[in-house]
Length: 628
Image (tube, rainbow, N blue to C red; front, side):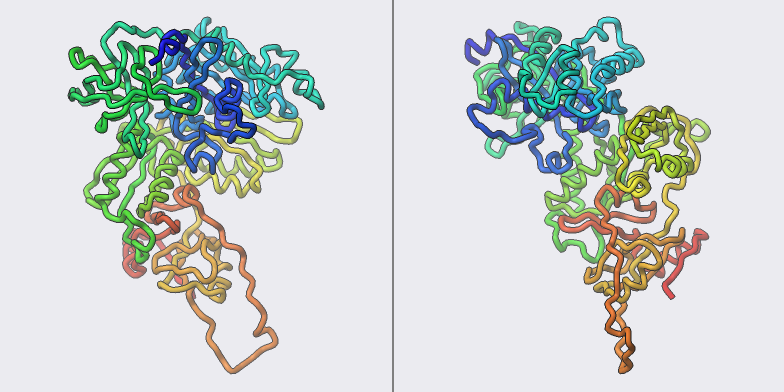
């Protein structure tokens, strides 16, 4: 490390917020302000969202590091996920920073997931800088957000010191920031904003003035917690974390203190620190800085890099326990192996356990079947991102219906509950509440606004909210906004029926025809269109009744010598309902699977054979229908 690097003061700060409140956009503005983009006139938006899924969904999934230089201070910035399903990412990142930029939308105010990230920040005793973002929005409540955040902190048990935080008002997309409330109000109301000074330096000043320098010991024995992992095709595995004491040097011999108590010896091949969008190789990284090291191919998140003469591990990372689980099984459908590369249980096992090593909030367990694995995570989105990632890598698998993880037994059974926040047009409020009633949801709050929308807050068991999202979007005609966040474990709420419709199941293997689908669409909603290849046991639609229906969607019209006046009339089909991965996982029942391959997502029955399925249903007292 150069002499200039060593003389720089250091601040380590995380950017935390509810989903879509502008974390990554603010980081873009800070990078631009400090010259990280160089002389480029145009620069990419959301540069920290580096993986395809993040750009496609517009959310941050993996925490990422960057660093800027400002007025003689090096500020390490970590962009964290805002969704509670990625709480494991948030937990381990907050352990290596001393402060947090809390972003809150100037119109929405604190949301359920704002509460989640603030609670985690308080648990880690971080100094908070409030950033009220998107003050350019029409109807922005610029002056009210501070009071709402203050009340939230008090409600979470914050101390007098915690609630003494600076406030910066920003329009991160335009690169504007001010600490003056009246200037922020004037900016919000102005039709021409050319007279304002466009700079985000007030955010950087607040970080330097309020967030303390890391209290680490440069002269102590080496200790660094591995908080996240990266990979480089040339360098190999890269471990990232904050150096708590001592220093790291290229070629240094170290000890890896594993989470199971074992201590193994290793040697550091290279040391990097962050500067703007780049990793800069250095000779040494000292206590307090966030560094990346290579050469430790067998290191995992939560392990401590320590002095080989005094290998003392740091306290392990604590993350919230998983709340739901699904089964990953080898794809055994008739179409298995058509597009995937990794098909066997060995491939599946290796990939899942590799993911569990770098994601502390994910749990993978083997089952009685060698072809099936139980995977537990923080929510449907958490598991859905893993499934989608594996699918794009070339894996094929069958996914079961998610099940909540219960605690206790008998009368003392506990189940996970979530806080559900809905923002909907008031006209749909009755139907939404009618749908949530059987799902055992209790209303906590209701707020109306002048635009005719209403914000509803419920506490509901996780079981009751499974499959609610597609129903909610149908009821509100796509105009509703829905957010969920884990709350706590509570008393078991009894039986809940989340899907009342049955499935329409293909009778045979073949190619679907317009003639057959025209008859089938009268029975329910179709998931397939004409000319698609289906197999016996595949689910091709949602039945309008509660019972399953076996139906022939490959039937062709018999040819005759008779012609009628309407013989040439084209048959009209209702467009099929496209079922995405997360919609499919939420929709299926206990005896159904989602078949996931690189080029297709299909729904199917676990038991494909119609006669065997009917026999088993008869034994259970269940009724089924067959096409006439």
